[in-house]
Length: 336
Image 1 (cartoon, rainbow, N blue to C red):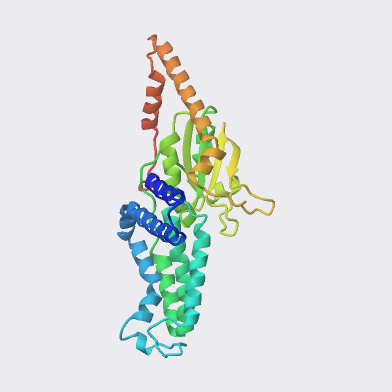
Image 2: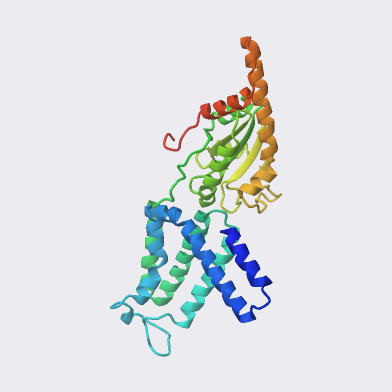
């Protein structure tokens, strides 16, 4: 798709016979086609989302005001500030609020990494806009919508990532023991809380990294500091939403913390950092750590071969690495 888009854009720029109006119309068409292709590409993932109660309810709560304002038989009885008195259409103030909502969602989504974060921002700010619109329309409708939002928050939780991963889940009694068990093993540990939407959005990214880089010398772990408050205090990770330290990634070697992201300033607030896969690979030098882990696997394989008194075979180190990967114990979220 990228090659097709590049060739079309190059043809539009290079051709000397193309008029300015034709170029703009072609660019608009290309943008529409690119957006449609992107939507179709993510359609299976979006379809899976629509099957989950959390997102179905969020969708209907997002469009609640539009439905009430446009519903025949109901909109005729609503108040309006339009000059023509048409209560079944948006007035100028409602349009301003909706445009302001669109601008905020676009600004927030500039830092969004996953599709879950994009849709989550849209749902969140749409509900805030609906509260304002309903209170402006009728205070009774505003109170009813706020009550529905509170019931939704208390009863409907965001779905937890349940995909494949090579991650060890720690508790308050096992984390120190695991980190200090073998000084040759490097650990990358995520400190998270189940109630944090940022942690839930980051879960697929961290799971994908564990599938790509996990080995005998480079391990991935997670600990729920919302559940284990002692771990939060011990490793100085605040669970306060104002601190914005969730999620936090730490690199441990020999049980000692080497680095963490995001970093924390003197006031205890996290320095803004984007949790993308590229940033994590670059900041934590995952490629270099993975190569060192492969050397460790080869060394272990050679020592085992020498201890057994057999001649090491070519490629035995890589085979041993793959075997270690498959044998790493992981505790699933269902077990928790």
